[in-house]
Image (cartoon, rainbow, N blue to C red):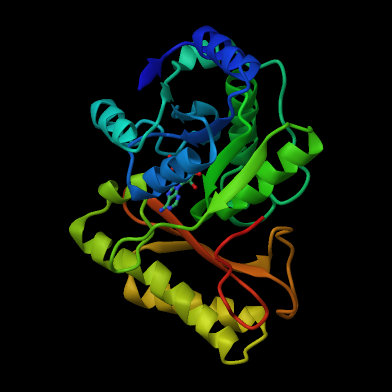
Length: 290
Ligand code: AMP
């Protein structure tokens, strides 16, 4: 596996690969790898000649009171795991290389961001789309692999690729979970032992919401209320949101008559966790989204 730390070298490499007709699969990450990240790399490997994984903790997507400094880092272990997963190139640019000065160009997102994490993290998705646009132009991927755990991110990145005509296909893959159901996340290490045990209730509560739909409930407000009640009763966390919306449009719905997302975000002492389920009108889970 080759490690590249500068934009110039990476872009030159990608242009060379493109000219020799190699397909490039990109897995963008913030590092501190777990099975969720590795599943994306392994899938990318099946589908591309060359897999590039990027590690970049993007300051632009963190708010002033968020966990940029506390975000877990372990470069040495990430290098080992990426190599084992079959990654060909690990791209780890520095902050000053990516943002040598204040950006002169800003992203504005008009839809899909006034709800869920977009509402509680103003500027977050603008930061995400900025860094991804840069990575797409540096790495020139044919396909980019994302996890459905960040379902709003997928909805917004799809809009970016469509609106700005990036010649790049988004592949969305299922959320990888711990044995008890908790979605794997780099931030899980920042949970106390008690919080870790409580955190499984995000998933269990969402599953309960989904089961209500399977049993015939169609009213989003009732489902949101029940899911919120479970998380509040079973954890010490503070619920940021529980929302049921159309997916991928992320619009309010008055009844479940189309594909929807049931999503939550919960603040624990040192970590804000998110999770979601996407399902059809009859409550059946959607495993792969387009
Ligand atoms: P991050 O490093 O948290 O920015 O995540 C990088 C990529 O890994 C994103 O596309 C995430 O959606 C994906 N990812 C994170 N956690 C999981 C998970 N538990 N299962 C599948 N994909 C994940």
